[in-house]
Image 1 (cartoon, helix red, strand yellow):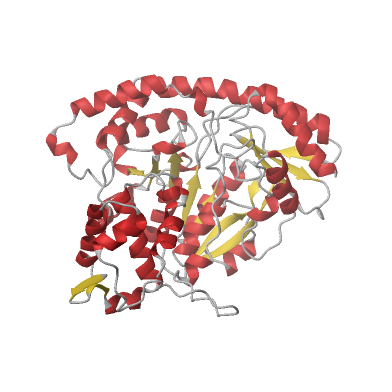
Image 2: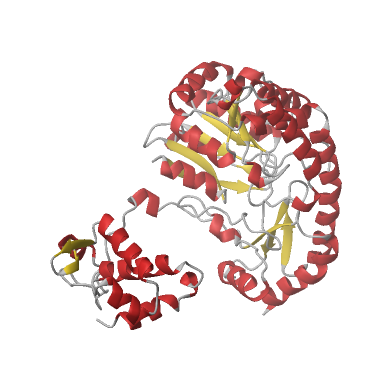
Length: 486
């Protein structure tokens, strides 16, 4: 065995260049044994001889041999240090040409789970990304410091599974004023964000095989959560007034859950009309179903008066209300909440107590202070002004560069709008990929938001504008238009 060649090749890898010499030698020999280069029963040189061959200190060789022996890769014998017989079983085989691929280790339902929207990137027009540079970090840090300073030893233990009482009360008070909700703190449950809330809804309020209605086109994160819980997803068409179930849907596709984004439909931005909201609540009562109202960005209403949430339209409405601070504050906070009907709150509390111990007490207390001190409302007012300016700049640029081939939908609220192309034959998926590859512009294709087996005619892009400065809108839209027109 040419140990000098083996060791030199190992040292040449950038990842190993800064390692101590004794660690380099240990890992080099270990890899050689694992790969089968040093076969079972092979005798390694004496420590003095190997040190001379490699030009290293003898202590480094002794260290490597001792470590390998303690790990079971080497055994000491009259012949010296010998590769253990067991090590041969660890050898990594070279892949054979045309060999069948190994079976996937994930379950079939995991493999079929749709991808979540790519809002984790800060690329231009990525949906769901707020203006992170405008968040009051220093003020938040002071509140977080105060929360940590106030913690008792008992509060370092697992917390209330439903969330900190102070935060639940603060959220309930905010929702009563800002969203017209009929809510008490006992109905509020803190989660790790909307996706966590959806997973909990699927597990707590439905059984495998139950039907769940979703808007078509709709939010793929909800599709992923419900499919993971083995629910049957049914796409319900969306028009200018939002989700539009037919009498046949109620008769033949009786749901257990109805997922909707009524204040700013995701992705196309329709607003669910009052008549349809009331009809959906009545239909859910008769079907024994729950409406899951995802109010993900309703705080940002740009045109017209604020809209009340569905949860507050009727006393004890069969509505589970979902909210998040990822859009209003920042995604890394990973904090959201659910408001459940009064009758379900005790049972959900009991379930969470058995299955979901919570923590992050300091962050919850800091957020409670942020809300009760008025800083949350102040931040929302600032962001509404900023997002309205950016929305206006984007709409004007789209009209200037693409007004003859597309139309804007859903710009009256939220942090994104939909650009719908007139030509339904356009491959918006290919155009979306080209925008990202050539210009770094993330404009998710609307056709990818199809839900269920029913066709949906939306072709175009989802454009988030909250994180894009006004002065950048024109040049970015010009690039987008160039790709579309080519």
